[in-house]
Length: 291
Image 1 (cartoon, rainbow, N blue to C red):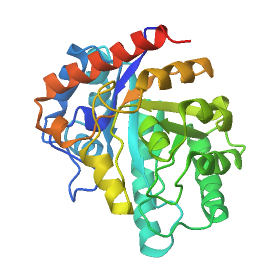
Image 2 (cartoon, rainbow, N blue to C red):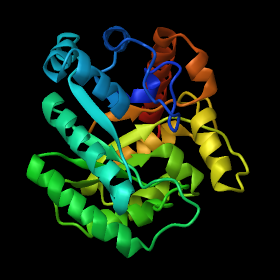
Image 3 (spheres, helix red, strand yellow):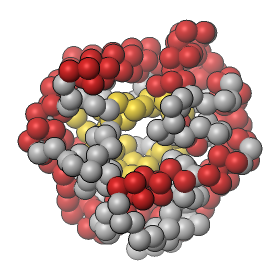
């Protein structure tokens, strides 16, 4: 098992995190790209704030040249949210959508990661599904693929809900992002996961690790996902077994490695990238021994 590994945006961003007022990385983009290449990764993930900074400074054409010159062949961009909203929220989301579509097209991105917000009161599934069908149709017209992710604090709290939304669309752009953190935290076992997820609709898979915690509120879960993820094989998730079951299900694409934690943000970028890469490969080696 020699996987293609994507250093997702937070894995290489240094002291940057989701939901901060400014999500941009303090690490110069050229330095990040060099660090990712030198530590063995095949792909890079970039968040909206960093993409816009790149567009306004060096431009996407130059950014693409730097990425590919470093030997990095896979690009993903993120994170599209609020596509189901109306009014001012929708206007802001539409601007975000246009900017992510522009970046994805210019950089030849494999997919755009799509979320379902942060809420304690999920909307009816039919409302989300209708909005996603429209979004997927627009993405298909632009030649872009969408990887929709269920998270336990969003309008799509479970993987089966995300499956229902994605399969309600016949668009070739409509796909799933499967992240071990979110499947584990919602109680979906690695074996049962592939009984409910159609592998042909899976556009992306992410691995990481974490810990068994008692989370009683949405904010507790959000805090856990942003502060306490850990490197593959160093937590309670049995990442090797997840990898084995995912491969057995037929997944053949690249694997995002998404490490989001206070510990990782304090770690020098090259050291953190090297540890994330090495521990992920160790889990693939263990996965190869499983049946």
